[in-house]
Image (tube, rainbow, N blue to C red; front, top):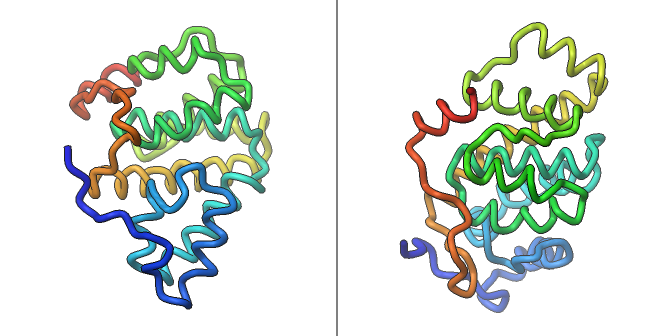
Length: 196
């Protein structure tokens, strides 16, 4: 798989775009790579996306472990190799277990999830694959997480669908020739496995 966009260098950016690049460089483990390489081609949109991602990653009401779990769920659903590669170590540092990540990587419903992880899994999988959340699951999520966290989780899930699409459309590869972390599966197979 060949990346479809040449990597932008900081020096190539217009002077008006460099303040955004500076903000990206403060938080991005990929420097201006990953999704930012594509987003910077549309600087106004990139600023708006960056501000949203900054909230969803660093200021959200959702616990970091659960937030990163939700991102990995989107990466698995989308076969988004770079997204998984970038967020697995962050999720590990946030306290998500290797066992849960290994099962999700294999496209299995993780058996060893904590109760709050199972709620996030069910919510994100239903929302992403069925585009709805059943009433009982919605009420359970609101009762256990509160309305703000449920809304933040919902927007996070949708935003990382967008990030996955951007990474997949531009064929962003794993840096330094690393192995692909996810088996690329047909969307119907992903659906069958994760909804089981």
